[in-house]
Length: 433
Image 1 (cartoon, rainbow, N blue to C red):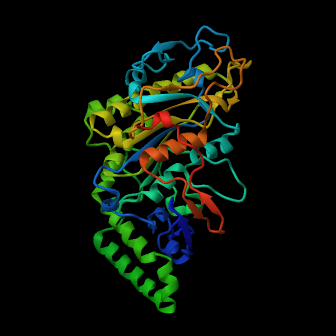
Image 2: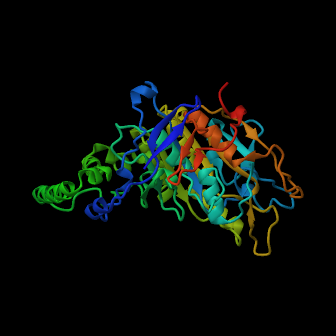
Image 3: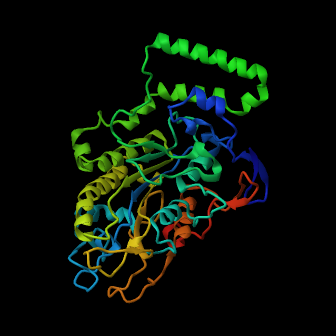
């Protein structure tokens, strides 16, 4: 479906925001999960974007709602602090939970926002908001941040998907009104050989299958050339075959990584996911989401966070260090966040409940200023609202600006509704002057 995009100068150009009928294509590609291969038709070439390394984004998604008090905003020795202690970090004056000694050493490359605010305290709605920058709307499905980055900054040199979800997520990032081709490509066990990426038959049999497919395609095309061409069937098959034979698939496995590097991330699914995320960035992939589950701590909050920290701490720290060492951090935004925080009050089950007011994230890289601590929460837990509140959409506007996306441009959705890609004002103190 063809729509119009308005840029900042008011000029309008055609892009494809809807998804054409692909019934015949999907029959041919059933089971391959390759809908993402339909190309974005608003692509700009790498030459048009300049010669510098294109920017990427890695999101460490802490599913379930991590407690700010057991991560990046502890208040030890107070009624709300619980048993969690704090440790000094490489940012002067900043202390984080003592569960994160490795991150404490690397966090000077990042900044900490302690005053995020949201009106969504439900898991599904909160996840939607924190992945799209828009609150749920029953009449429209918004694209995730990763989908927008992929749509706006394609790269024809990348033969594998430009948008990944690693480790499995109940609500993975989606393409929304931009189309299913911008959904995150899901890898549930990163670092291992991915399934359905190699032909299960010999080359001769594969060639016969492709010849038969060509006969079927020709028959369909004879009945309606324009309709068949509109499905992008041929382009999708070509790209699928190109990907299946691409050397870039090696980014999804870690067999060639030095043992010391693998060990630094931790021998966990999430640790391998963070390492694969770094490899995907090196390959040119635009957006990667790595999920760590287990933060829904209505009961046993402190044990849950201690257990998860044993996984998150080495992986997050190793990712920051690895990106720095490989000169990738300046071109890669890293965001560590969940759908909301946890209540200052500790409930009778030794847990904390949902708290969308005054929660925390860590963000940096991609040219953003580092070493900043933004906002404060009340150490006594009596004030609901934090000082210097930061809206979710403002955080994403900052990221879009850093990566080079005109988030204010309006796209006509498949039903003809004009929608801006983002809605917010950048946090200027995080942006380079």
